[in-house]
Length: 412
Image 1 (cartoon, rainbow, N blue to C red):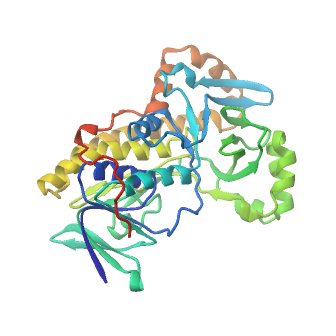
Image 2: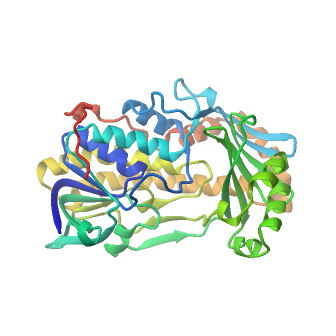
């Protein structure tokens, strides 16, 4: 068995894990990222980046030349009528837009920057299998198997391994799942080089609402909402039935759907729920991103919140490592700040879901009136700022950086 020592071990190489690893490595912290996937060629869902996360990524220098499609509007549409148009261009430049960017491209750039920073190491294809403990504190992980089995001993372990976090499960940390959403979402993409809109749209239809946005390069991403738990029943009728249901739900893309959707395997159902880990910090262990809190795709908050977690944790973790402190109290400020911010987003998403996706005689009658009046109220700007930048936006603590970007970081 191979043994490695580090200041911090991050379990999970998604946006939260790699942003945190880059921040730590540039701050002189020896950091190891253990990622269960052997490559970046895997399935991703979230790819809308809000202005707050764009600002962080810009401060880290990872946006230049990365690609993606800027989108200036978030719209609620019913038939030919736009009920609500949230104009991001009213925000201060240069963070006055959303960016549609496949998550793989973002991870590739973050990983390149991490590898170029001394003190960073990657354990690729190394799934966390056990937590190492000593005197009640987490002191590392065991990952991989066979000849690739590795023990990483670290002052702090960071669980950044997603909504179904293995690290959280191994720690025995409970998870409160809130069933606040009436829908699940079936995601798929269409090749559509001539149909860019520059907007994220929720289409109110005669059946189920549909989310549609540009997807880089030359594609359209579609999220077909269905009643909670009903996809298996719909899919049991076969691909031809599903294809016609999709064509009816998204008539503007019916021709592409009939031409390109050929198998159920091309569709990715997502169980939509919000939830929160009961504990975010234990001695030697801290949870961030989806491992700590999971959200609905409404409002495109997943990547934004994950990156915000990393930015908030960075200075406290640097201080804890420097002081040799692995007590829960060392990161208490991080947990208090981010719990409050996440709770604010939970409340907002619940209201967005009811306002945009729910159906009923009263809500259907009230929705157009509220949508028309909302942009003219003082609260509208507050909501836009909250969605775009989060509850407590922070700048990256670049004053803590010691190591410039410098090729020579090691990978394993």
